[in-house]
Amino acid sequence: MFDGLIIQPINDPHAIQEALGREIPIVVVDRGFHPNPWSQVVADNYQSAQAATKYFLDQGYKHVVVLTSELNSISSRLERYQGIKSLTDNIDIIQIDENTYNQSAIFAQLAEKINNVDEDILFFALKEKWLLEFVPILTMEAQKEHRRVAITGFADTKIVAQLDPELHLVTQQPFLMGASSAELMIQILTDKNDIPHEVIIESNFK
Picture (cartoon, rainbow, N blue to C red):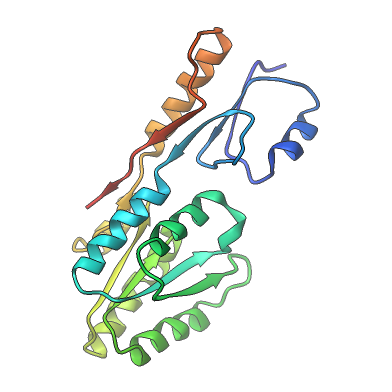
């Protein structure tokens, strides 16, 4: 008996509409569809990943190792990867199954990059979980091997920065995304004109 729905979907629009069984106003938040039948509030995933990559490339880091959950399952994750790839093809991808991954096995892959790649390496995590999981051990391994290694990624909380205040991270604004989604839904429910199809919330890189 609700009048509208704000969702962070994992399904396609057809599957969502089929599950609902009726036409109601919908706002999609944090996951974009292309094309999307509904209004959406999304972060500037492509642009912010591109800006972070450019910063580190300008600092002399040549080889990018992307640490990610399954890449093609979430639109925001794919946009982040595409932002990185827009500036360099010198990329390795380590995809992690969130349900079955072995921390030691993943770290062995990361350590292999530190040991065997001659260029300065940027490790770029597309999800905060992987920053929390691997920043401490990556930092220790780089120091042990006397390698110039940078670590960055997307952080939704302040926890990663507390682990290492020297990190440069992409921080998004989930509170603002939620508030903007609510404002957009109110616009739709009150039949206001000029309702935007997409609202983009800028991220911060520092």
